[in-house]
Image (cartoon, helix red, strand yellow):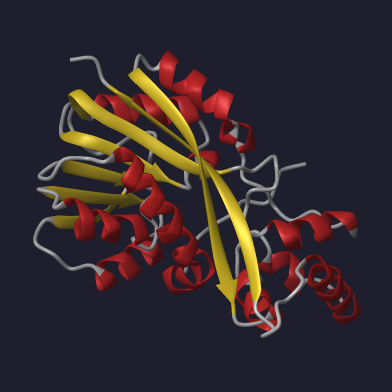
Length: 262
């Protein structure tokens, strides 16, 4: 059976669902990279532009090229970030539309599990980066409860439902990332875990934001109303609120970085 494909075509919906998580993890990621100013960056799978915006705000880049396969996402990114040294274009992570050695740093945020051939994606990152340059990514821990959507996904599966999954979940494992980076010939390879928390006003806030996700929305839309209420009740039981009714949830990503040999 062919797995349903996950598509992120609505930039505004994606931003509501994942934008804040992306920024929280991206802040930690950039602190860890600690890049110098004035680099030329490529942000592969830039989506709604959350990490691209952080690169511009924090890293004083000479240039940032954002690449994504969704025109809807790119339109949102262009609206949020119109600067002279930033450009967004349609493209494929496995065939980057740039010549060799074009950039000083290539990053990929929360994307690698969606690339059909991750090794080819890393090969392309390496190809477009200068000798001595940086190649880095972070991705939600898909296999051990690190995804922001996990409270709903776990209960869906417990109810016998099968929401679509990213095609390459195994590459979210730290050892799989390290294998990809070393096989690609990168040096000084380091990994780290990124743990971030997000607080929602109440359970309804959490629910309404999360069920817009392409990984959840179509499945929820096809459920009977009684089953949706059952799912809500099960998820609510997993997420106790504080005295003000707020819900705080923790997500976890795996990050890796390496350098091209000089």
